[in-house]
Length: 249
Image 1 (cartoon, rainbow, N blue to C red):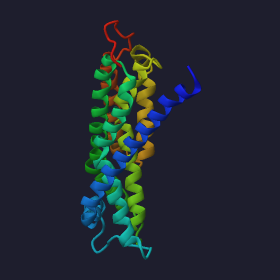
Image 2: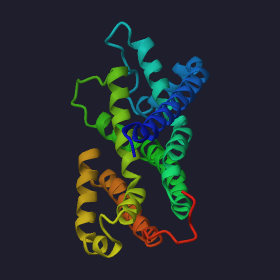
Image 3: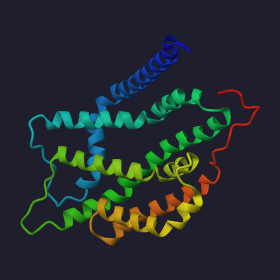
Image 4: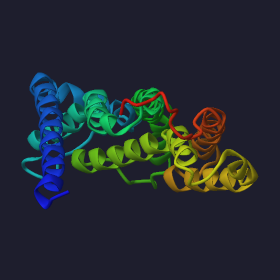
């Protein structure tokens, strides 16, 4: 095969990748334009777990002149990506699907769908369960005479980092399935390492939550449960040689 013939498939793949990226970006922009008018409302919703637990008379503050404008806009952009995640993953699927066998496509598509659901579940868990505990703890331990007044930009960075941590943590089943499917490990090996996984889950819970046993446990237990869920479904994701009749790729 000549160099030109080798370059043509690579060039077509690059064009396909560019088109998929452009579609994903356009989707995010479209969602952003639809949400930007409600930027302040979105920020109010995000800040509610903290504001509801601030001492009476206390409020959030803006230490930068442009923060009241740019912070809600930044949040809206992140929210747009969050909303567009299913479409973004669909574009990822569209790019990798031609390189998979037909029986492999049937296995991967549910994983991409599950990834979106687990990401949303992790973020929802952080907002509705963890945030009330975290902010209740932080506002309750303020020394006497210290007024709690959180900067809106710092608050956004803090909650986005927690969203990221919990969103990734809830992808544990997908990660386990992919590790087993690619042959990097197997279900039996992971079962033998279960005690270490449990300890690691509590260590992660300790690092991501306030130093109280309740909130640490609220993160560690879902991670342990998701680990077991991943082990269960990984048994169905054993990579095999493609059947002879499976000619379509």
